[in-house]
Image (cartoon, rainbow, N blue to C red):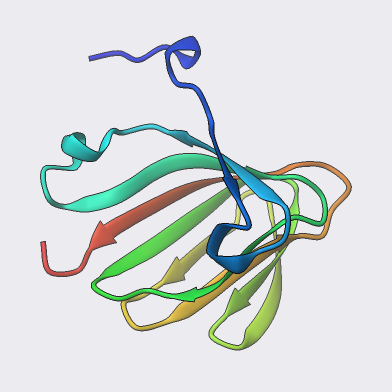
Length: 117
């Protein structure tokens, strides 16, 4: 199957996980395409100053691959600057969040898979 960019409209999520502003999310897989193994495979974008609120993963884990921009990644209580090419990993039971601290949009691939699948 091939899905062309024009066929995948972004979903705008306001105050995502209690964050500031909004996040544009382009889902690369639909819910039924995970076959019970996960729930998110998307390209997410945050405008400067916008954020994903700190949240804890339960029953799943999440990976971000930073495509563009600069962020401040909250990694279990420690804030770390990230940029294009960096990878973050949040295991089941851990918490994370992200704020765009750069001058351009922060774009990242997000992947959430279930730990018990």
